[in-house]
Image 1 (cartoon, rainbow, N blue to C red):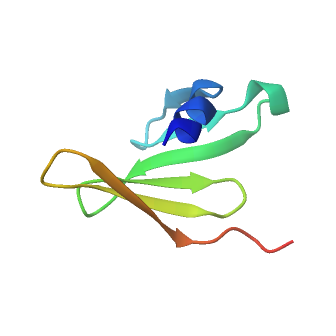
Image 2 (cartoon, one colour):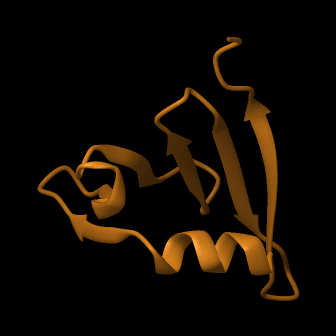
Length: 75
């Protein structure tokens, strides 16, 4: 969790007209690296530029539980 917060602290994010949030890494030339979008389960999906998809859902306790639902591209 701490690593995720550090990663997100280095990104610049902005909402767009479609209701998603695009995040850019200025140190990597400003290319989009992460898209945050609401999902049908009341949570959100994190789509990374490498194809990795992480789905987060809010638990009854108020915490978010995240899991990888699609691995990134094999290199």
